[in-house]
Image (cartoon, rainbow over all chains, first blue to last red; front, side, top):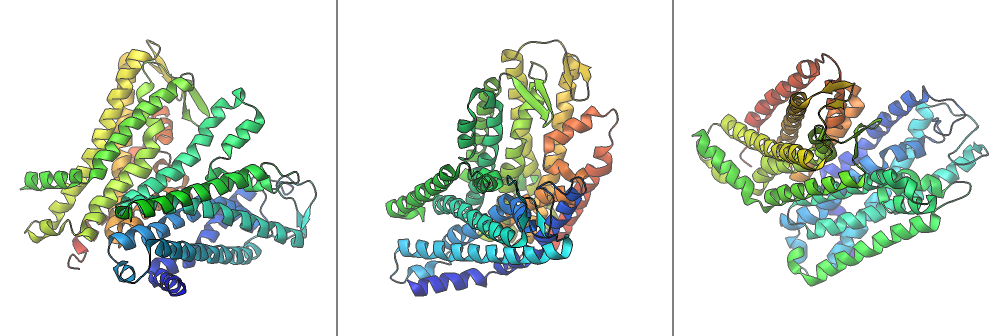
Length: 275
Length: 257
């Protein structure tokens, strides 16, 4: 099993795309910083949206989490699962005495480690770029908090934010993993993946039309059944001074992980033609 | 000559089950968004800030508004990546490439088939939107579009045709940009994601390019201005430049691999 994992890890890094993705991190962050600087022009300093070096990691992550991050997982999961299997690259691994379950598990672990590494890189680079591009006062305001944060508190806050963000990407990865396992071609896999992200982004927006007919609580719960919405607003709400929806959001993420993990397991067991 | 190639390209496109399935799903979505029209109490939006009551005359453009995201982000990138990249990387194009056809002809045939598919989709949408608008939505003799222009029956028909025409031009530009990226990228996953990345990235480049991301909203805005030169100044140059780059890239591609 360990060799399998190492082999997966090596095959992941054999791709030029993997290296390119990591080289893209500073570019993405520079784009985000120029956008946020433009935004700063329209805001006053006491608003939590105002970007400083200390909250740049969080604001730039919130900006990029459901575009760049989700797109990246889509690419890698489809490459590693659908493309490797359909193009026959996986043949050499499948000749050995490993079961499908083990191969898929190794792939999942390798991807999650890759994901973790990406988050760590993003965090470090965003701190560096934040200090280069923005002012760094001693204290500033944070979303849904009444007292000011100093640098050390902010670091803890940022780390917790990244932790939650990592959890949401695990949920997304589980769904995309299932989609790539059942798709016959790579474009189908990407198409269904994009459709999933688009749908889970659009139905909460449509839900706002019905807001007047439901209670605030129910609306929030329905709103946060979609993972991209948790990525977009749910994390800040969960980390507010009076945390809301913590149990619900974690439950939704857990449901996504267990449900789609289970579906993947069933798909692998039931039909060999699925993978 | 060209007709044979065209028919072969069409056959190859429809031999992929995906094409038929996507068209079927699209028609399902059409029905679904009609259902949704009623759910919202017959109210739709020109853009995020302007809402409007749907009536028998303005239903066709508003129907496309709900579905343009599906076309730009799922249908076009998927078809283009399959046609320009998938066929080559999977080897399905090998039998065509063996024959002594001019490369540029091959490109134009592929491009024309993609445009045709989008054209069919737009036609279905327009027909469904117009007919159902006449039949089920509240009947009116004149309607108001964004920018306060009031038009009668004929005017509304012309407006919706103009609207669909501009959207079609934007979709052709998306196809052309997608085909450049598909030829350049090593596999279809990357060409799919690169197309979407280009569409979303255009918003960061300039606000004027936001029509790639929110197609219908910007078309409504353009049509609300009395004389807009958006097509001549921006869209057609992008279309032509991307076609020229396409021809260049397509001819230069190393086909032996």
